[in-house]
Image (cartoon, rainbow, N blue to C red; front, side, top):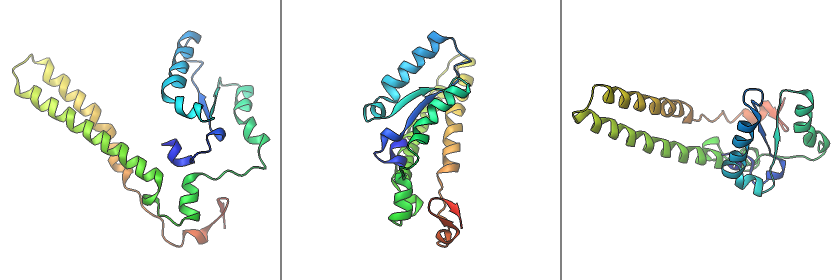
Length: 171
């Protein structure tokens, strides 16, 4: 999703880990290694960097320093280019298309869990099993319902350009 928002400018993305005060160093390092090797791997390979935020002023400054040092260099998000320069409506953007794909995958997962719950309820099993399946179904349903509420993207009126000027300052 981040790629769909930013485009290919991964060198300007700093992936930051938090909550170092809530875990021991070994656990934190293990989780950070997993983020780097699995979830963030492609972004790091394309130039993104990583930092730790340890709730100190110095760690915060280390995270934002590259942005301060490069303050003369403008960076425009892919989403901004698509809406402002290309005249696309929000639902027509790459980010919206990515969100729709995630929604479809989540809906399929939801349907699969629903089928499992329905099958479990038809079989004679212990009293606890149907309740566990129902709770599992509802735990899956909550994110889907949240996504359904958020996925309806409304496009601002065509007069939105008159209210804002680049770079995102009120007119």
